[in-house]
Structure formats: C-alpha cells, structure tokens
Image 1: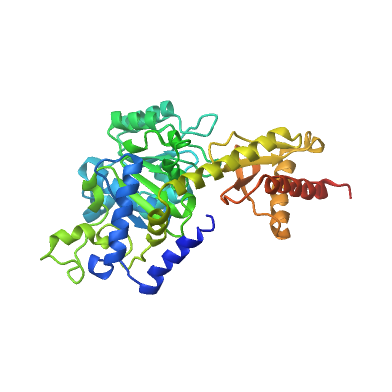
Image 2: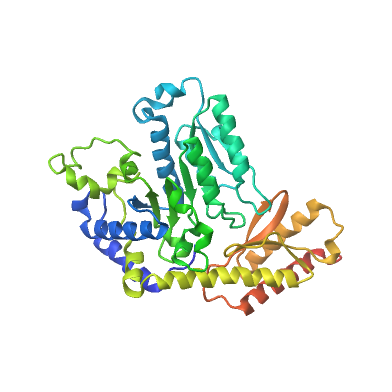
Length: 403
C-alpha cells in the first residue's frame, strides 16, 4: 500500500470532518453520491454494461462480500436456513470453493467465515508463470460435478500476491460459463491496470466475471481503505444480505434502497471512503492513474533487468507488474544446501529492515525462500534500485563472511 497522493488525503479529510457515515442515504448524501458516481465510472472501465457495486473497507472485506453473494446465489436458501438445512440440491454434498493456487489468504478466511470451512477449498494447479491453468480448472470442475459437490465460485487472480501473476481470464471465464459456475476475480492489486493502455491487456476477460474486487488504496494511490466490489449482474447487488431493520430502511420509500449502503455491505456505520478518489479524478482525470500504473509497472521491469544483468542475483520470474521476487545467490552459495540458502534470504530481509535502509518482504515459491518487493512509489529512481541491490549484497556478504 503506497503513500496516497497528498491531495487525495485532503479530500479524504472531508469525510473525517463531516463524519458522513453511510448506512442509509439520508445519513450521508454527499458520500453516497460520490460512491455511486465512482462505481459507475469504474464499472465502465472494466467493461460492465449494467453493473452494480459498492465500496467497502479493504480487499479482505470486499472478497468476503462478493463470495457471500456467490454463496447465496449458488446455494439459494442458505442465508435463511444455513448450510445444514439450506438448498436441498446440496444435501449430502459439501460445497466447495475452487481457487487459484496462490490465492490471497483472505479467500481462505472468507471460506471459514461463510461456513464453508477451509477444507472446502480446492486449489487449481498453476502454469510455469504461476497463473491458473484453464485446462486444470476444466478437470477440477468436472471432478466436482461427478462427485456431486456444488461449486460456490471459482476465484481467479488479477494479480496473485506472491509474484503478481495475472490469470488468463478469457479462457477461465469460458470454462466457468460451460459449467455454470460463478467467476470471482480478486483484482485488489492489479485492477488499476484498467486505466493503462499499455497494460490493459492483462485484464482481458475481466468483464466476463460475475464479481470483481479492486483496491483503490493500492494502485490508484488514495487513502486506505477504499475497496470496490462489482457485480456484472446488477440484480445481485442485494443478494449478499437479507435484512429487516425498520428503524433504518424506510418501507414507504423503496426507491431509496438503491442508495442505502447498509443493504449491500457488511458495515452499517460505514465511513465515507471515496472522497479521495473522487477528488483526484475530478481534478486530474483518469490519465493520472494511467501514469501511476505505467510508472510503477516500469519500475518492476527495470529491477528485473538489473537482476538479470547481475551475476549474484536470481530473478524467480519475469514480472507482469510491479511485484518482483528474487534471491541473492552469489557463487559462494552455489553449492550450499537449499535450507541454508533459504535461511540467508530470510536473514538478509530481517537485517535490512532493522537497518532502516529499505523495506522488503519475503515469500516462498515451490520451497524456495525469496525476497519480494512491490515497487509502488512512483518517485523511485534507478539509483534507488541500484542502492537496494547493493544493500542486499553488503548484508549477504556479512552473513557468509568467515568467522
């Protein structure tokens, strides 16, 4: 998550000062109007013709909301009767959630919260670039059908957290369509690429998803938290919840339900989260977001090229965005045991963070511990990247020095 554009912070302060919460339209008319306008504009960018959506507090809550909708649509009476006594068609068969092999942990968390259980998760094998394999998805869905297990949703990624892999959504959507299965796409990080003419192709097929999430507080550089949930079919906008709260929802004005946020989100008293994005878009237009995406994605490529040119680093993938995973692997470690190489990568990270010079995170890919960076500051320079690699070298040499 980057620092936000400073002006976005000032616009966001409007929500803090006015405290316009959004359970119902009357409580937050400005915030509701802003959110509705942004949902409409963002949905059009995705390619949805008559979509609906909402803003919620973070990608985890966005994924939970979208998958709650998918569960209620797939299992019909489950909201009222619960999983044990819900849709008769699922009697004796445990529902499953079919997901990308590297899906964000919030997907597993959602499975637990929704009563499906983490054991319901079926992970689809990945290709060499860590993207979901459509052929493997086809086999997986066929196996679920033959076993009589209802599929709540297929969860694809745009992009997956470990290395920023974008799934082939066109092919995945076609498989889901053949099997009549809900397609959910977690585009929390990569969704901002819809603004980029250079990188928009990474999201080809996104408009065929049944639900999509996108975090504006990531690649659109606005204050956290500001996460979008979109439904391709507008009729699904009220499917997540079935509430009766006469002290909030006015039965004499049913038309207002379209603007009552609490009918669509987990939150009742929901903070106005869209002022920052609305302010930037109003002042600078969508070109600003294209520039931010293109600049940071180019930084990912620049770091990758530096890693390839160095004889003591090993890039673990060719980046599709601004996420890069790699290892420091000098000749002195070429014959070291895998466990020792893994230990050194993790220790480099710990020491680097303690030094205060750079912040990197760790990941693990097929048993290999790796350093991972998300280049999300558009002011980062080539000199900064060179300094990062030199700091890693110095820290690594300290670790392997004799004595």
